[in-house]
Image (cartoon, rainbow over all chains, first blue to last red; front, top):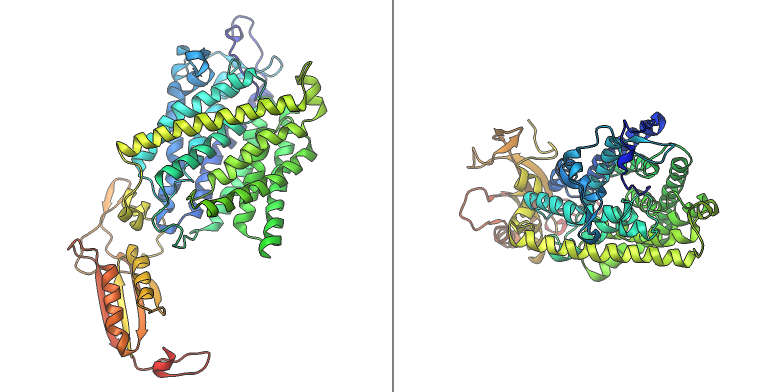
Length: 429
Length: 115
């Protein structure tokens, strides 16, 4: 992702910049692809929960599309991409409220200008999927209203500031040279640590870990993983905000890392259990995609194989820790998104391609200096998102309530919260 | 030998199963079924804002074949876990029917020994 200090001189009419139709076409496509990831996530998560919770779980992702879709247009974009306010905590530009002032505005590098509307919508899709990712950690046990309020507040207080730090031209991380091409910190690490904090505070599902909680539909989970993989090309290659070498590079390493992650998980399961599983394959795909997200423009194809393969090992190990500590991160948001995201943001430093170093770094740059910058960005994200999430979940639980009662959990979200049923398997009529 | 058949609320299944196991009754058959007792019209489902009263409600059926000594034990275990305690209708029913014969397929054993 290029950092964007929005330049009013680029407004049409002053020197009438030429919009790059190729870049614009790719960014429109990428925006659609990234939106498709959220229904893909709904299917991925929806298949993993028990039958009685399938609709409630899928609604979490779709609700984020509704809530954040509006919030981003109202003030999210202004907070994320306006100039620094409050010491750089987030940005603010009242002209960007309700996406005002975007009428004739363009963004991008001089040879790759796209209408700012497209960029704002592309970024808005990232804002949607990030809180939707968190829902996997407290699956099967949160009230719908509490969840919706959580999404709204988390989007405003956690996502928008982090997005500003990472991708706005005057953001903390961007100014320090942190590499986060498509959202390792702002999307995956932030959602992962928030998921862990929320899961720890809310406690385990009723009956966990004693009761078997079988996925209701792994075929849907696999389809969801496939949609996520396809959508991720928009996520990573679209983050170039151009249609050329950078997007080509990002797309290539994204494909390689996802395949390597999937293959690595299969081999790992084969060695440890003697059987490969569909959920393992799907998890490996996601781990590979997460790890390459911050690194998509900078690492070599060989580096993508190594990162993807190691991401599955890291995530697999992190999921084993769940058993050791006994917490209930139901769908392994921290185990996969958090841990593969942290690993990717740090380890990318050792696989940066020479051509990127030549083009983007100056005197005094070294691998270890970059590693320090990466570690700082990862640490700041963990601390900020973790603490802010703790405040939010405590606040919501103590006021309108977030955790479902034992009886509601027993009946299932679909019936207790929504008075619907996901499947008609029981109805002979 | 008797066949104890219980129709219970779906969300009580885990508790009833555990209760039977605690009473050392581990052989049971579970089926999903639909029907209704006294509770019509009861729960309302919502589809596009329209209230729909399902004419058949989701239930779970347990079948436990047991020797005569175990019938009351099984019944007590089921009631203990399936009774909601709210006093409202809908906790379910238990039926006990004589069991003509029981055969273990693996060995061909018959009668009480096969249960």
